[in-house]
Length: 73
Image (cartoon, helix red, strand yellow):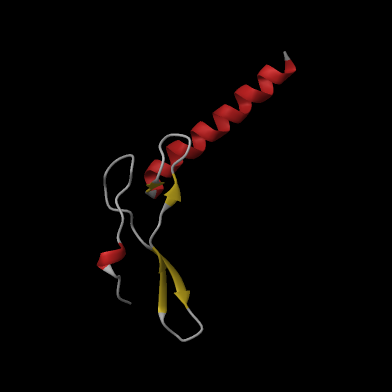
């Protein structure tokens, strides 16, 4: 299993390297990785690492709860 270091990306929130996720083997038997991390919106435009994604998801949930509460008013 070899990670292609040229594909590594930097988190747009914390500036750490986004750890690639191992996806298993493709049809040809090669090891496949996901290098792109997670969508960082609405915190930031770009891609983020898994720890920062927890903050992003919490912000999304809070926004939905606020919108739901405002719609009930």
